[in-house]
Image 1 (cartoon, helix red, strand yellow):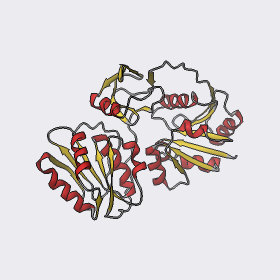
Image 2 (tube, one colour):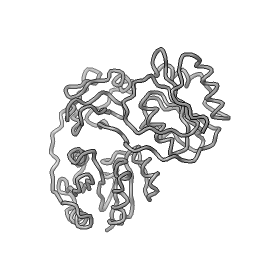
Image 3 (tube, helix red, strand yellow):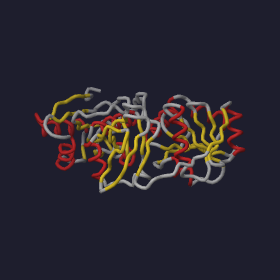
Image 4 (cartoon, one colour):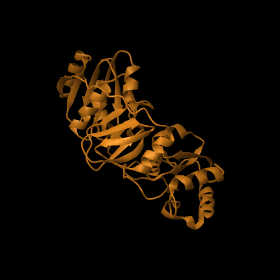
Length: 339
């Protein structure tokens, strides 16, 4: 089998699916789609190439045999995800590990689907993705009421139904149904420009449920990277010169702390207490998180980014000076400088 396996999300690595399927299918290449999937893949030590693209883009660029591997939070949400990806392609073979199913979407490679089903013992299901899309409207299906809903990596509210309907109109984004809006989150999203909602990256639920593995501490001096309310962009900022990350926002700090824990990079997080608990916590030694006592993390985070030298001879000294500068405007809620 001359197969390329595209793995989406961290769950397939965390649950052992990716390792099992690599052993059974012997793919010539494994590609990883998703920010937390990259973290989980790196922690697993499995041979894989990480990408910054969504699965449909990765799959559309491949020639020859390819399949999508996913583990949805439920079998239904896994099927819905496969349908969404399939709707952007000519055909798709989708291995859904949550239900033990190989979906052959929209007349995909039936021979490949049957071979994978035979090797894995999964059920083979032929399916069609044919949902019409309405301009300016987006359905986020497979939600569990009470979980966070994301648009382009930013939490815009909490699901109140299994399907959330969003609409972009009049220069803003609004919830049509199924969402308890988070106005500050929508404000952060719009700050970067109103997204084309039909093509935006939308999801619900936690971004990873298991804690990160601790990595070896990086150099204590170098560049301080800034990630402001866009934790999913972190990997674009990381290079060998980075000694720490200035993370602005509760969820952004949580995501950066999780990813950087494995990378051995400490985080200085600026939060204001509106976290949505979207990822299992974890921070590298040297990390510090401060909560703003008056105002919002947006403003104070930008102030730190604008006024502090982002080249640090020593991360601990940079943190200490930053704390002195902020004074009694913040309180320290996490301090791992003893590690």
